[in-house]
Image (cartoon, rainbow, N blue to C red):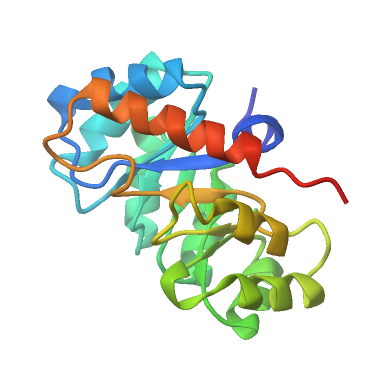
Length: 213
């Protein structure tokens, strides 16, 4: 199964990206198992974590059914390094057409960070598979609704930043397709059991946030 197929499958089940900022390689597999047990299939190791390439390689090798990759990807060379480690996901805080192009060249899923309609349309034109709405603390549900009204219908919008189980339903009603979850899910020093508990809370909140039209 290629990266895009994995992404499409996860979007249909639990479209939550685990952002493991600060994770170290010696804890990656235990945290990965906790996420796997909670049915999370999107795992991002930000590149400003300790030895992130090693953590990505470990997670990608041990959890091949998951879409594993990197966050805070800022350069073409970083895309290449993540790909060489077995990563299939590129997430960035910004939109850089060169980064998107390199990810597409290597058949990786790419989610650039955007805040404005101009950035959103430019990212989609470059071939992005979805849009990271960042920082979500500044992109309220009303703004998500406004973006959803003008962007192509299939566009995947994933708010990141300040997302909690309590505000997911409001964002989802506004048009969010999923979310990236960072420090509310994982912070350095948390045990795998603690991360697993948080992962289950978020998964339950996602399930409960569905509101039929």
